[in-house]
Length: 199
Image (cartoon, rainbow, N blue to C red; front, top):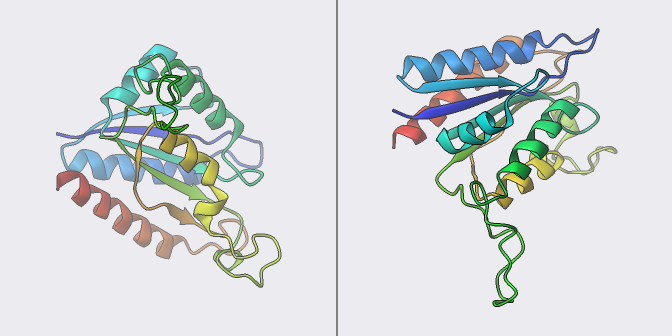
């Protein structure tokens, strides 16, 4: 059996209660549980037990993060969760410091992670259209990809030696949603994750 930690990183606002991200997360959870995987869920906008969350990180074979992109990054409550949980785990449970050693100057910054057997997947919803990415003629992102936009998250997880799975993104969810197509792509992405976990 595999263990899946599901993180709902949505931060509710009056105009954005989080139903879409909740739907994606619930769909992922149902798919994982139908395969016999164990799941745990945390919603970062609510109070959580810090020690329990560190333990859940250690328990998980996969950490699945569902969140909207707010102000070009994760919502503040998700960032707070990551800051608190991973800082607590720097005591030798999730990482052995930053990996450097005064005795061995060849050891690189960011090489102290202890979570090399754990995978993670980012699943994001965005107002930005798909055409805004990977195109040098686009003014805002200037050829950058969705993973370039989410690089701080990827680098944070690399610090702890977590192994990435392909990012899922649902684009243009407010002005021009392609709901059925997005669900089909999401189901395919989750199915691929299940296959990798079973391999």
